[in-house]
Length: 177
Image 1 (cartoon, rainbow, N blue to C red):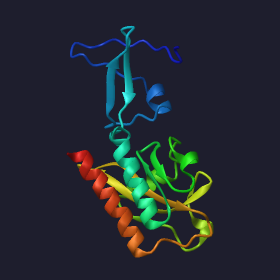
Image 2 (image 1 turned 135 degrees about the vertical axis):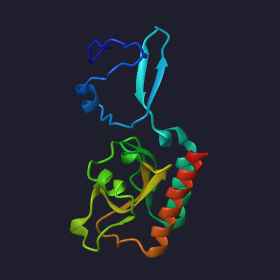
Image 3 (image 1 turned 60 degrees about the vertical axis):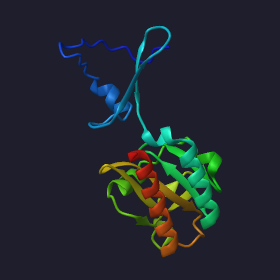
Image 4 (image 1 turned 180 degrees about the vertical axis):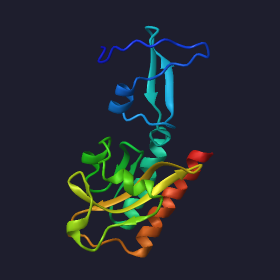
């Protein structure tokens, strides 16, 4: 089923320009990777590529172990979606789009810890972000490890923040290999 029908010519080098309207609606940015494949009907399909989504099971297992060890809810996200989740809120968050407020926290390339004041915390579904550790692969932001909870929960302690940073670093190294 076609949702958009814009015609573009391929140039002599085999390039095609993806129209601005499509790039905007699909949140395709300069530097993003696209997976290109064909289906059985001979159609060529461009799909945004997420190395974190490709990790699938290892990311889910790591999130589960981390959630049990830290006794808090954990999510792993790429730049657009939650790709793995464990603990409270898992069903709601898994596969959900990343709230727009979270990406700027990750693009700062620093660990984020929620402020002590619950009113200033960033929402993540029906829960709130407690900690965000960016996943940096070859210098590029690919996503993050997110610890989340309720407004009543205290900001995470230093050990918990270090564990989130370790998880992000582990997933980054896994993707670099």
